[in-house]
Length: 211
Length: 195
Image 1: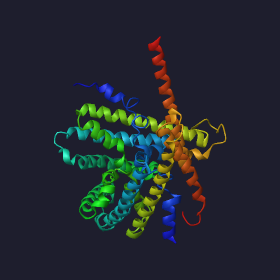
Image 2: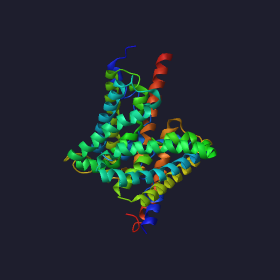
Image 3: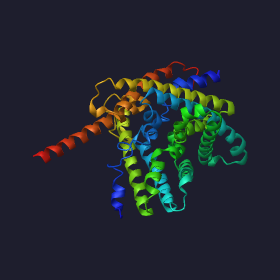
């Protein structure tokens, strides 16, 4: 069965979106999304780790014995995590401080071991590469969207580098959005909003079929 | 005084679920019934406490003398995985009753980010072996408190009329957010005690 590489890439955005459809990898989704930039760098770290582990799990899939595959996956995941940690500490020390323990905790992010187990262990290398890039990119977009909402409501503007938009806050910012409760509530309501959108589009499809 | 601060900090002020966002997957996954929540809590308290001891000892006696701190992440995850496996084998032989009660929850714990998280926090706060153990215990108690309260709330949902769009994860997250808001109140309580 030949699967399309493009489909393996694109499915991470909607069909198998890690946050909203598969609901995995929740801890960093909430913990680091206090701004767009934090979400972006966390996402980049996850893309690297996920792609690396997917490719190597797929390369070695014929020689990994079934019984000890989980410990092997863990080592294949921990290696890129250490690489990310060291690179980040060297070149982005400020971001490394902000993301804190959530950089080493990528090791236990269920997205990564989940993709190794459910996808890379059974699929060819190229497909696994595309799967890693796609799911990782989908996850990054989620983190940036959630981060954007929380940053905008919590500080009144969105700051990327030294540029803020809009220049002055439009309203009295609600600092609670930057605290943990704000994170939980934002994600919960975002999921509810998506459910409404999905239900609407299904209704419309049904109506069209009936007509 | 520091002991009190660590315990209060772990259980209430820096609660693992509500303030630190650690261990959310099992928190939402196994909180449908009070009974499973209690089982998971038992396993987490046990593993988190002793995994803190083991990783702190590993840090002090192996990683630091050999100058291998940069391998901490790999080393810790392997130590924790091996420890969980060991506990499982040991419990099966010596405490079959307890093993049956906790059995299915134990393997899940390796991927509970609270366990690796507390080990990393211990290093960041440069706690010794004893303080690490205490911090692990306090964190685990806080985690258990959160999941037990939450399981109680979820059991009540069964009697309620919930709008279909909110059912499941959205409502779980919003409720957790509201509980977290309540726990935010603790942060001001002991300001002089816990930094």
